[in-house]
Each structure stands twice: as structure tokens, then as C-alpha cells.
Image 1: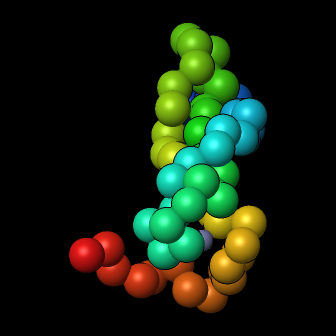
Image 2: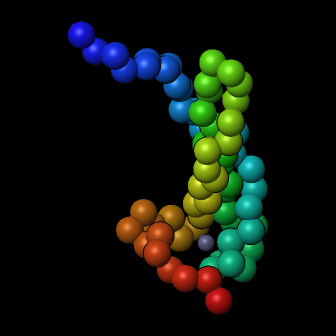
Length: 65
Ligand SMILES: [Zn+2]
């Protein structure tokens, strides 16, 4: 038998908000909150920012500054 505690967690993406893109130097980005819906409430797990203009999933590693 499994003694593991089973917790239902649903991960959802919140509504997108306009965000500043330091690369395009314009408000071309979209910031999305990643939310975890726990039985005890909603917790923000992470925040993801993407840019509509230079949207490039392979280029997430560029350092700021
Ligand atoms: Zn951009």
C-alpha cells in the first residue's frame, strides 16, 4: 500500500499583463503569474515574462544588464 499523501494541486496561468521588455525597450512584453491552486488557497508559484515581439523560447537565458 502506498502511504503517500495525495494533494491535488492545479497549476494555472493567471491573466497576462503588459510588461516592460528591456530588450525591445518598450511595453511589448506580457507578464503572466503562474498560480498553484492548493486546497488551502492560491499561491503564486512563479512569474513568467514573454515578449510578443522577440518571442523566442530558446532565448530565455539572456542576462540582464
Ligand atoms: Zn522584446
